[in-house]
Image (cartoon, rainbow, N blue to C red):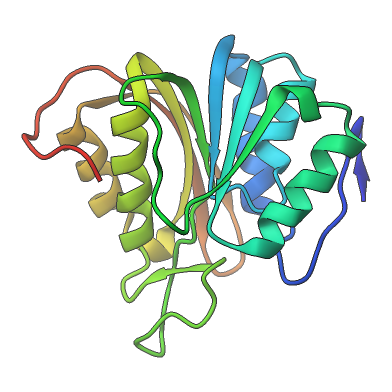
Length: 206
């Protein structure tokens, strides 16, 4: 798969870029951030971090995922796009050991669909029974690793209770600086850029 200058291959059942991925890309292109160290959290194929590297938004990207197919896919895609030297690929299977307040920009397309069956069957798309559980976890991780004034670019859905997500962002001390929506047949997608400002909630870590 080739999109502009971006080349992508996919291994196994890794999540393929879809409308949610491209909505984050669109918002990222509107913000045009300049960051030294970035994180593609739950990276899947790596499309967000790769785009940020190729556009010069990030000097280096840490790609993190729990899925082995995703990690294998990212390894190949960083080579295909000649950015392997600017990429660090980590498994989150044993936890995320990134120094607190060390990252300038976090990109996140978390699983956000409700697990209608009552238990998660697809970790790439289902974020929990209500859909927002994985999103809140990603927000916690982003808050921990981001520097103050660091940027989180996140996507979520009308199916994952946006009010819960947005209230949680506010409680964690994030301030919205940019947003974009896309209306689909069965849902509305939201991508937001939020800056880590201060702590309103005493909970921290992840």
